Image 1: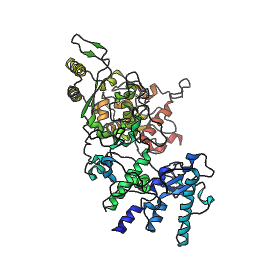
Image 2: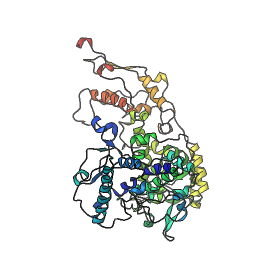
Image 3: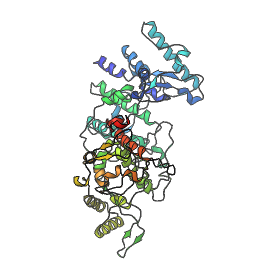
Length: 563
């Protein structure tokens, strides 16, 4: 068993070294590399630039292949302590149980602190060169022992991918840890000067552990909650130590090598849970999103607002996203906590209206919807050409800020005045049940079966366009899409994917109405008819991942008279 423990522990050797290093190699996707580059692609490439903290470097950073060293040391029967010293300080409070049984190791190589430039440099030189020299003396393949062989540029290509917790991975960990949330979730108690667990108020690690070198965001009021450990340092220390502890107990554990978490191949092997139970955090099922403070009072003493409140199905949106941080990017509190009506420093001067409607940012409601439509092949064929900054029509606004009955208006005003959360929740549920979803388009008799595009007949014959078949296929693709069903408010909305500048109609104007046969130099942003057809059709096929037709004759037959 001791041998098994040693083997499992050794695979974590040197991993924390990356915490004291700088990733300076560009990340590129493997599938985008040339064949000769793919052989040089790795996820464990680290450039050791520790001495930068003391000033400019005299020599290039050292290229360090973490997994190569891990495997070499494993063959020698060595564990993580070959390079990393146990930390002298324990994690205090209730969290100590999380790492009981294995002492956390310092992320720094053969030291606990960065004392002085020469001392750190000598540490690397002494231990690395000695290890390489000893392995050579034993007849093993080893690394370089001269300056020029270590301090040099590389033609290796890093394929390191970011790693994070999605809903599937979170559920698997929660289940494995028997819902003992305190093993991962903690916050710093400045008065007690220790980490504590605040049950029911669990937050993501990234709220306290920032990206390395990142400035403290303006929305952070309590600076004591920002940890000195970066997200990279904290995740490697906690995750790897936990995986090592479980492996030592011969339990199924997660990866501890770079490629296990950060290579595309490693991430593809991570088991996914499809039917994920809802996360337990006392979160609401429904929310009534306020649209500002009351601006006046009626004769009943109830305040009125400029825009109708918005019912929000929180429970449903949990299943649409892989992480709560999609919406709660700063904290688990409400949007209005940081984003006020007029803007504030806490919200980086992003106003509440912008936080919901800024279509250029995925952090907003509209921006998230827009990006989803652009990424989904079933939607992107139509939405690809639509400007994300197009003007919203009044009826589009009313899809969210839905019209309310007089009784509803009184309910929301009274609930807000009395600050009654239960009444707000009840009203939100009532309003959500009033929503309608459209799942159909025009009937077959209103949709031409086929169209022949003849305007450009010359070298080729007219292109036969299976109009009805395409319309029906598009409708079938989005029939179960609630987002499309909700915002496609007219039977002709679907038609606007092609007839993009005309209102919904059973008989929209032809393309040639706007796109002239010759290019109109007075309207440089409006393509001519030839370009409009090819751009629209071919781009739609590309976005929807339709492989055919290909080539000119895939759509047009050769004109025998022009052959």
